[in-house]
Length: 56
Image 1 (cartoon, rainbow, N blue to C red):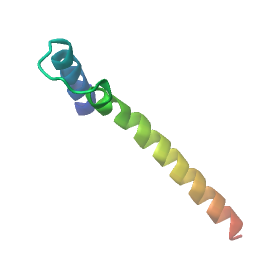
Image 2: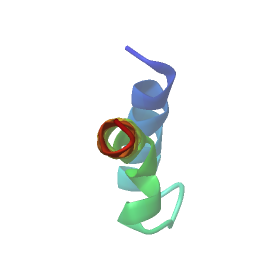
Image 3: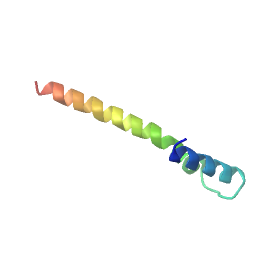
Image 4: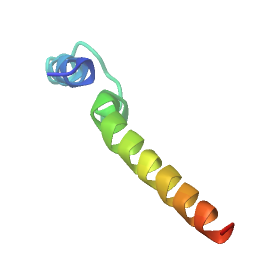
């Protein structure tokens, strides 16, 4: 398990036990990080390919 997965699980357990009163968006944020990073990487590579293709 990655660090962000473990952190996400810890936040979820703390939220369910009532130790923290954060919004669920914040509690689940470590789990979204990988998805957001993948989307940004995909958009960056796609943009680079299109820009490189226009210069030829």
